[in-house]
Structures are given as C-alpha cells and as structure tokens.
Amino acid sequence: MSAKDQHTQTITRVFDDAAAEFDRSGVDFFTPLGMQLTKLAGAARGDRVLDVGCGMGSSLIPAAERVGPAGFVTGIDLSPAMVRRLNGLLAEHGMTNARATTMNGERPDFPERSFEVVQAGFSVMHFSSAPDCLGRYPRLLVPGGRFCYSELVDEDGLPDLVPRDAFAELAPFFPTDLPNPRERGIITWNQTPESTSEALRERGFTRVTVTEHESEVELGSGDRWNAWTMSTGLRQAWVNVPAHEVAAVRARTAAVIEQRRDAQGRLVLPVRVRYVLCETGQ
Ligand SMILES: C[S@@+](CC[C@H](N)C(=O)[O-])C[C@H]1O[C@@H](n2cnc3c(N)ncnc32)[C@H](O)[C@@H]1O
Image 1 (cartoon, rainbow, N blue to C red):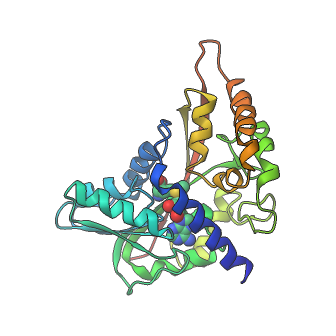
Image 2 (image 1 turned 30 degrees about the vertical axis):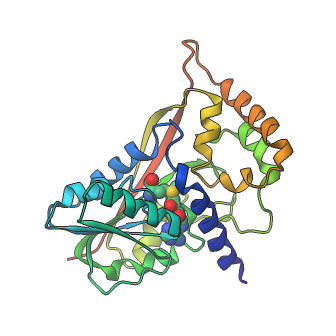
C-alpha cells in the first residue's frame, strides 16, 4: 500500500472511531467555527453547496438552513461512521435538503458546475496532497462560485490549542511511519497568504482571499482538553497509548493544560483560524 493510501486509511479509522463522541467534549469548538465558515462561504437561498469533510455537520447544518428548501447541501466525508450518524441526525431533525455520502475529498466525483459553493471545515488540513487536489474543485463550481475552507493556524505544525508541552506527552505515541501532512517544514505552499494565494491561483481559482480570526476557547479543565483532542488528529496518538499507561498520560496532559489557568481561574486558550476563500471567474 502506498504511503498516501495508508494515510487515508488512518484518517478514516481515526474519524470512524471518533464519530460517536465527535464534538461532544463540552468544549465549544466545531459548532461555532462551522457557523463562522458557513457565513464566510456565503451560500444564498436556493444554492447547491458541497461540504467537504462534513463530519457531524458543524457547517453542513447551518448551510442547509441558509440555502432553504429550494437549495441542497451535499456532504462528503471519508468516514462512513460520520456519514451514517450525520444522515441519522438530519432525518431526526426532518432536514430533507441535505445528505451526506462517503467520498474522498481529495478526489471529488461530481459533474462539472455542480455547485455554487464548496466549503470545508478543518478537513483540507488532513489531505495528504493539498494543494494539488484542491485544483480539482474549480471545475465543480459554476462561474463566480466560491470555495471556502478553514484550518488551524499553527507554529511549526502545532496549533494554539495544542501547547508544545502537552504535545510532548503524546508525541511518543504517534505512528512514525505515516506521512503527517502538517509535518514541520514539509508543507510550504500555505505558509503565507501570498504563497497560499499563488498555489491556488495556479490551480484554477481566479481570486483568493486569506483571513485569520483569533478567538478564545474556554476549556474548563485539563480533562476536557483531553476529551476535545479525541475529536482531532491527536486521536492517532491516544489510540496507541498502551491501556496500562492511558490514565498516567491523561493525568500528565491534563496537568500541563491546567497550568494555563489565569488569575481569575479561567482556563482559556487562544485559537487562530485561517479562512481561505477561493473564487472562480465569471
Ligand atoms: C476535524 S473533523 C471536522 C468535521 C467538520 N467539518 C467540522 O468542522 O465539525 C475533519 C473531518 O474531515 C474528514 N476528512 C478528513 N480527510 C478527508 C478527506 N480526504 N475526504 C473527506 N473527508 C475527510 C474526517 O473524516 C472528519 O470527519
């Protein structure tokens, strides 16, 4: 199996395993940021929207509300468990203008000009071969269409919500044989707004706007941070921790996170999110 296929298999397994508890850690994260992405992607009533890496619908559900009954939102995700659960949730809420299906966002399989808007919340950052696969999206959009994706801003591969000392506790448990697309130094195309814009314009988008938003995430406790990481790529490390060591590793990561309590006793970490809005010409 190629390294790329192995990466895809790992990501699928990580999010399949995460599906039942995804975004239920008590940390208010994916839901508000999915709403923000949807707002920036800007779907209008009646639009056809594709949500790439839809997970449990943090951005798909608000998009379905925006497009209304005359529009439709298609969600795609690598993880069949996410897709099954999200479709169950949509049925439970009687939402008939959205549907998820299992598909690799690195090879989107839709006819040309199928969508007015494509949006992707924290999923492009898991692609093994961005930005090349992003070059497969302009043809799926109508002229004047918009593709907006979000990702965590990181320093040397680590986003604000994963402090270096907490990561150090988990680092020994990461699989070493897999290509981590955010591996330090390997990814260069998205290091600056200019390089991001250039890479995406070379691949068929006519206008690219990169913005960064900073907000604060209330963690509540170190234990809750541990629970939050189970909805992220850090899960890859947690599942490798031998059963007899799990409690000790959890206690150590919780302790280093707890050190960040401020003078008022609040445990809050900043989070910088990058939104990349790519447009196709008329
Ligand atoms: C961190 S979750 C975010 C889910 C959702 N967009 C949100 O913001 O709550 C990343 C999701 O992207 C999916 N994903 C990762 N790589 C993917 C790919 N190549 N194609 C489709 N989905 C992918 C994962 O299975 C997971 O559901």
